[in-house]
Length: 130
Image (tube, rainbow, N blue to C red; front, top):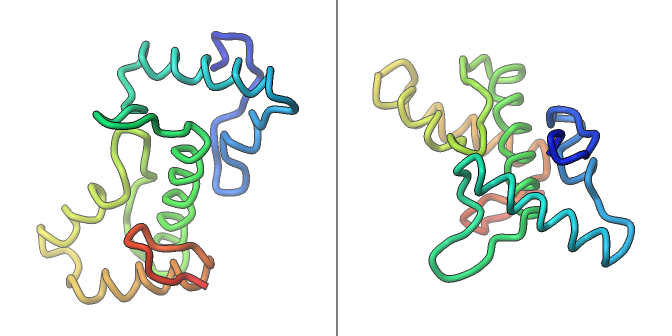
């Protein structure tokens, strides 16, 4: 995005990409979506599924939520987990922790559920979240 002329900071738990690039009008919205699409293509990021267009704002919001959950797992629950990225989602980061035996699967599930509840984030499977 920076190379395309947008002044944006790296997303953080406090402010995601979506808040930084929110368009002021429809013309700006189209320009931003096109720029995000081009950046995604240039960097081989999956913004499209086989059947439908994934809204860049939704993708950014999902990554923001995953970053918040990872931060909660680290700071509140004591887990050693990296921040998710567009390429490596939260599930892909949690799975090796469980499979390696570092953490008990039930312990991980309780911690993740607790973080979703504490942050008021809706779970990807559609269950509550505050």
